Length: 153
Image (cartoon, rainbow, N blue to C red):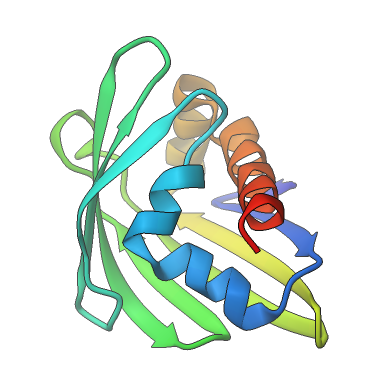
């Protein structure tokens, strides 16, 4: 995990083909099984994976609090690259950032996922890290993806 000025970046290797990792990330049924930090569940009400399409979801925290989220896809290059803008919703409406997720095939059965989130200001990134645990949350989310892939491939 790297944090630099306005950017938070992380990567992880998966012993699965790139298309399989892409599918887990873009299928509304699958993403609900692993998205979010430890203890969270996710309910998707809409997922239209195309430029301009929306992903509306609620992250249900272990404390019972719900976090509404709205994502607008800005770039879709299956199975290599996904770009989106997190616009927030409800209580998270003020959390705005851009994300690029790259699915890099390193071998036929190995994928390196690189995720980069860019915030408008360094202060906004710091706030999200401090108030919402974004640094740990991103790492836990990618670890949960690994667990999901192992159990469902």
